[in-house]
Amino acid sequence: MEPLKVIIAEDNPKDFEFLNQLVQSWEDFSCRIEWANNGRMALDMARESEIPLVISDIQMPELNGIDFARTLWGEKPEARIVFWSQYKDEMYIRALARIVPPETVYGYILKSNPRDRISSAIRTVLIEEQCWIDPEVRKVQGRAGHSQTALSDIEYEALVDIALGLTDNLIAQRRYLSRRGVQSRLNSLYAKLGLDQEQFHSPKFGEAFNLRNRAVAVALRRGLINAFEMGQEEKEFQTWLRKFRSTSRPV
Picture (cartoon, one colour):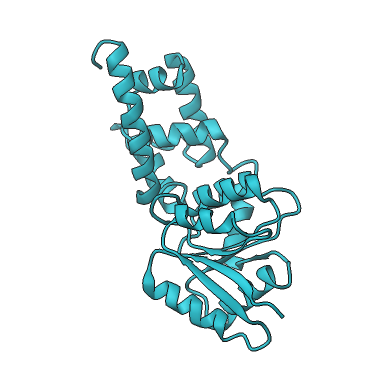
């Protein structure tokens, strides 16, 4: 039997070596491992396979795991990808839910799992062609998919904007909204995060909390945003800001 080609997309050499040894230890299947230390390289390698078999980290240089999968599935929806990550952040689960094609086999396993479980998850997806989702990730999926707690795209935009420190005026400019439209989005965001505005108002002292700061704190705890992704959002915002300043008065 011809060896299975398995692409490991992982920028950490120690994590790659762990996965390499794990896959090579399978006695009933012979595998040929190809290592990509960034998402762009992984995409180029995967394009060479009819049905790519990939184990991919989420956070990688040049192209993160979500963008890598989005592009690959757009070209090869039959590709089987196991996401292996230390993160179960809701923002990743939200992003992944939007890009998985119908009938596609994929997996999500946390790095904190024992070796045997990681091995079983990878085999289930790549060889047995069945989905395998970490139980801890399933809990997050349930919360992210619940209509009363899941953020819509526009509510998520509002969260990103206040996490970046934007004023109502700048949000209105960036998102082509009125000031009232901005407040409507923020109120909807606060409701989804369970922030009752009256709860944070004291008759004696006025506003007991800054709702924007409180919303960001709750979002961080839920994993709706994290430092890595906010770094990407900051780059996008700076690109927009430069264009905005070149076509209007300084803000």
